Length: 198
Image (cartoon, rainbow, N blue to C red):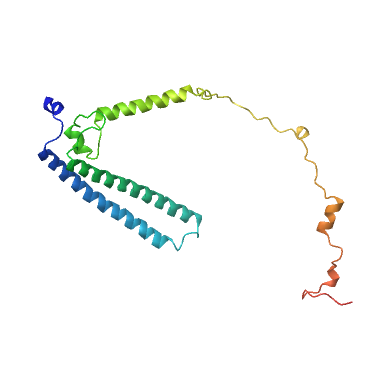
């Protein structure tokens, strides 16, 4: 254990072990990404004709597409992180914490081969972010503590004499002309829609 703190990098043999782990995971990740992309293609091809027919079906279609797109984005990021890890192995900087400069424990690298930070540094960063978040929220002047107020409100029966009556809407004299046309008489129109020539 004391040897890990003195060493500045992992040996070539250890880096080859990590390379094998990463290449295996990269191959599996690329297959998964191809499967997700194939599903997106199939849903787009098969569901495109029915899109717009029923809002329930559209909702399911959109939900499926969002989920698959999110999965594809995550998988692309993961494959990129694995590629970056292979670059660090070639540069012989794999397994060195980017913050502290110390070696990341082998157990962590085997569990999370894409990591660039040791667990202690990562935990410290998360604690600082959480403290900053709590500090910021409490300092805002408009944020107050939440209080739960429970009160039972009884509804009283409605008294018709206390209800405000709405005024009746009437048509003005000017508005009458819009609704009634004196020029058009029912007698003048026959069933065929043509006017009589009297």
